[in-house]
Length: 529
Image 1: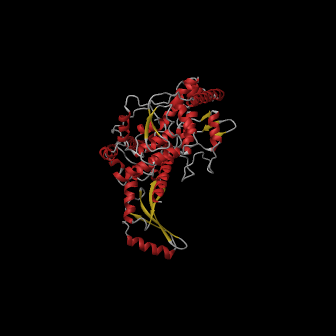
Image 2: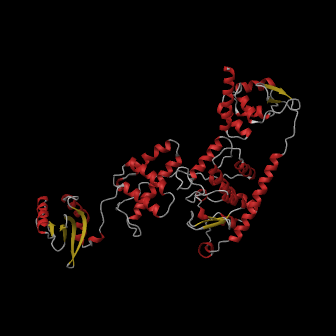
Image 3: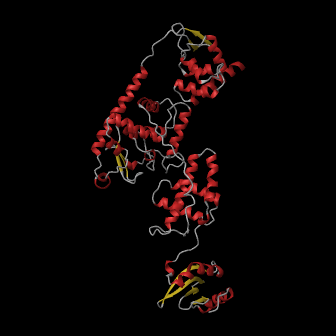
């Protein structure tokens, strides 16, 4: 059989259109084995031309479509037949089982890995897709994945590491390594189908060392725990309400931040006072009763129409991201309003303080859904221990309430007056004076008076000097003149004064800044008038 040509195909199309009879045009040799065929069929309004691979096995013919003419040109059809089917026909393999034999590109590999993460309901699939998309764009997503060398991955990661973003650099390395691991196993995994085969000889990211992570050992002691919780309850301080509620629930329940920030109305049972997750980090369902303090917080939150307790502001159909809680903590820490901690440290704090409250390690592990590795727990024991969990949470609730009351009572005790020499900021003057505590009035404590004074001559003070001026801290060891000189020389950091004054007065720095600016405008208007 002679080879086909475009002229032969055009003539056959006209002939079929006139005769209205189907024709099959064979390309090249291969009788009774297999070859490329163009099937022409008359339709009411047109003639269809489909490229088919034909195979004979035991006097039975099998066909498989690989394209349509003229969308798939003759040269392209021949290339696909030679690449994907010719060898299979010669070896006697069925063409029905053959797939595209072209090696998959880097973009195919990354997209297949992200699709697999999504199909497995992995929470990292969105971030993995974003990071791997940047990698494919930088290295070359059109290139075959098997051609990627370790040096190319290192050249992509090194600039990120040099910028000081060590965690992000290691995150990119981890995503790339796991994507290639998936590609190595996916080709022979009958449980999942992939669009391409990658023919990977090795994992190019396997030999790249990971960043050595130093595990945190930070936990809040009783005083820090109580002071943080009291500050979160303060209604006079302007803060991000969602982050505050999430931190409160983390402190009271000891659960993971990803579980609390994504709370849905279906997971909360107000009658039984329980939170339930059908799937957690360890792959198991988890049900935990919450203390009465946490129940009051959850009952006081109104879920949105999508059922989320903490929805995103500009995407209410999605739950709050845990990274925003970390950003809130860093902002408040920079202002000196909260102690230094990470979200995971609150889980460690709960574990530690709950032990002091009298909860056994076994029940604490079950309340925090930590995996138990003994044979009985792994394979046999399926009791949920809800009665024991209720008793433990009631004990923890009493401990937290007593702790908060104890710290609040200690704060409310009046300080004992002394006769040592202090530096004060007079409430009615824009000047400093030196005197005894009994003879000089207490420094101003109201926001307006402090704002008036700071808006005038002394609008640039350091934190240390502002503390002395407003609180009247002891300056024993310095002569009055020497201390005065130190204060004058320290009037430089305007940012520090706002943070310090706000901390001393218990208000948000922006509130103090607005009042200072208001006092300055009043002074200018008075001077102009």
